[in-house]
Image 1: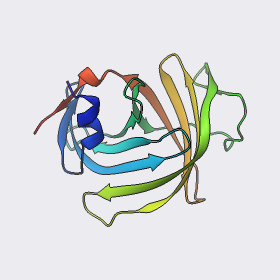
Image 2 (image 1 turned 90 degrees about the vertical axis):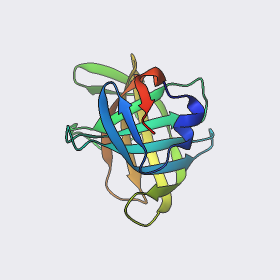
Image 3 (image 1 turned 135 degrees about the vertical axis):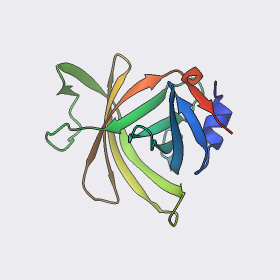
Image 4 (image 1 turned 180 degrees about the vertical axis):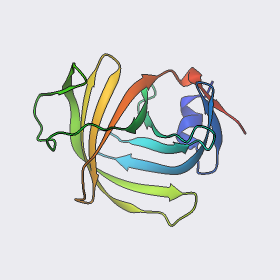
Amino acid sequence: MATWDELTAIRPGVALRLRGDEFVVERCGRFEDASGGWWEHRLSSNASGSSLWLEVPADPAAPVIAYQRSDFVGEEPDGRAEIEQGGATYPLLTRGLASYRTMERSSASKRGQLEYYEYAGGGRRVSFERRDGGAWEVSEGEEIDPAAIELLG
């Protein structure tokens, strides 16, 4: 079981197990906004060919979220009060601007600004993000128990 302190201290190259699948941390990012911010870790698995993002909030009592890219095709976010996705309705949880900086496993670090809209319902999330005014990226996520994360050394 990983602690909040361990999850916020993860760096590129660290190996971990999440729900039985092994991953390597490829990139870490620190995001700072008006509410305090969060950390994100991009995980990749050669064995399963999958990739996901682990979001660790600045508040240790808030849930950790595992995100994957979504095939969701729809309008760009406009701040509406809720969205429909996969037969479920997700109310707007938060939106804002955050500055970020990354640490990369195999390339130079990056800095910039992230615009985001996050919708949540029943432990599930839909997130719209764009960096530095670029194209919107959509991800779907779910709350996970930190006990499901094991650091491997």
